Image (cartoon, rainbow, N blue to C red; front, side, top):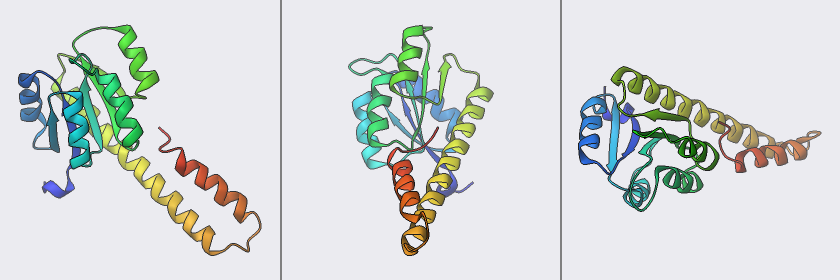
Length: 168
C-alpha cells in the first residue's frame, strides 16, 4: 500500500514503550505520527493533517480529554479516540461530553480489535468528508442559481450545517 493512500493517525501517549508497540502494530496500514504529550500533539497537528487522533487519557500536564477538546476546536474533522489502562467512569463521561469522542478503548488492547476500530474510524472520517464535499457542491450550485424559489433559505441552512462542523 502506498503511503499517499494511507490514512493519517496521530498517536499520543506519555509512555515511549506504548508508542513503540503501537508503531510496530500499525505502521504498515496507517501513516503514523506520534507525540509524548498533549502539547506535543497540538504542535504535531499544526504540522501534519490527520484523520484520527488516538490519545491516552492519563498524561501529565494535559489529559487526553483536554487534548481532544482543544483539538476538536481547531480540527473538528479529526475522529477522536481515547484509550487508557484505567477504568475511570468520570474520564469516560468527560471524554464523551467534552471531547466528543468516537470511541473509548482500554489498555491492554486486543491488536485485531484496535486495527478494526481504527479502520472504522477512518471510514467514518471518509464518510464525513464526503458529506462535507457534497454540501459544499450543493451550496456552490445553489449560489449560482439565485433566482430559484427557496434558494436563499436553503443556502442559509447549508451555511449553518457547514459552520456546525461534522455531524458525527
